[in-house]
Image (tube, rainbow, N blue to C red; front, side, top):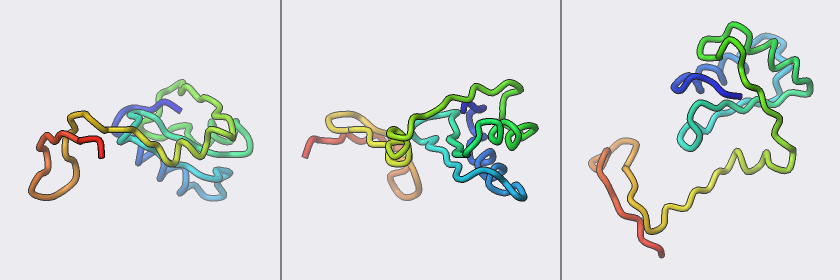
Length: 104
């Protein structure tokens, strides 16, 4: 589902915190795919009901079905950074620095 960038975590928590929620799982991978939240439910209408009125969700959200065989890939994205420049994230001395990743 497409969302406003920066609101992904808030939307996931809102989906999981709902009382008697029909949501089986919800997660976001904003470090790889900005503005997307993945919500698992048995009924597509359940997703629409739970996200209605949640901050960060567009008034008419674009909800897309992900085939069952592709779902494990969403939880473990792998992006090869070999032979590329990357920005160091997180905390520590090198935060914000550029680094070149060599092929090992």
